Image (cartoon, rainbow, N blue to C red; front, side, top):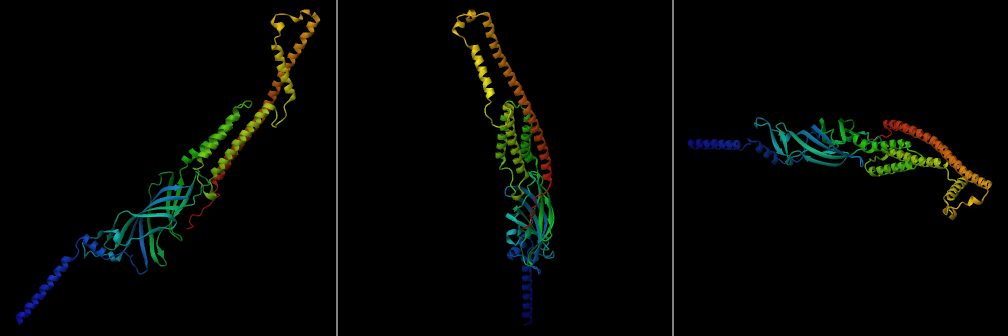
Length: 427
């Protein structure tokens, strides 16, 4: 009987040892095994701390401006965000497992969802399909966000534009539950590429958290394409006062300038941005230039008429001038007239007395003298009208030059004054 009891005790001890060895052999000793154990837990819900607020540390934010649309007042950006948070259900001790970290698929567990409050378009993509988990439950994860944000850009001083636009990067929050974001380093990537430069990206956390992006437009392309041609056309129109008044060269040249400037505006009407109530000052500049060019053409036409007729108003034909023209044509006709007697070589004055011949000669001489005097009078009147028109032309030139100088000073002063203020933090 005693031997039977001993045999039973030995069997119980052996079975216990076999169970203990089997349980130890089934324990995880590799990262893949531990990752599969975590996957079996189905951790799709966020951690539930006592305060119902999950702290997510955004350790690194890489910002890059992709494009700025001055027509729709939107700008697109790319954000690469590296974040960390703690999940107690993913922790283990070094006494249990020899390794300190492991890799898990991001689709098999909960990850924070970041939002941009003032964005009209958001696309979030993970940098990798895997995440890194450490033994203390710290999870590291990276995403790339493509966003488009509405931003009221003050284009009054276009193309010399600098503006700050907010990017309200936040997480989901409802009452006391949600995400509490801690912002780390903010880096600018490709800030000097393209037409728009990203000067700085700063974090503002008073009242609400958002990234304040300070942008500046490179004015070189706009100055060469928009400002310089208009300035050169105005200078050419000013120099065209050197062309003579008595001919039609000046009028035709100025009309060509007006047509060229009009075509220039038609080609660039779609390139100049629109900013609502903060419309660019360059619109008013183009209007001023077009008005000045048209007025310059009209003044040139009036001065040309003043040089030709002596008056700027429409008037009846000059009867004395018409009479002199008739005398000129009749005198030429008499000189060129060839009678049959002259063609035959017959002298009709042979039958006249000497006194009658002498009396016939002064009449022709007097007619020629009157014709020459009338021509001299016309030349003197033309010179007088030309001097009078040139005096007015000189006055118009200096008035035009003074107007351009005053306008240049005024446009410079207006471009330095901030007439329009836009609040982009209303979201």
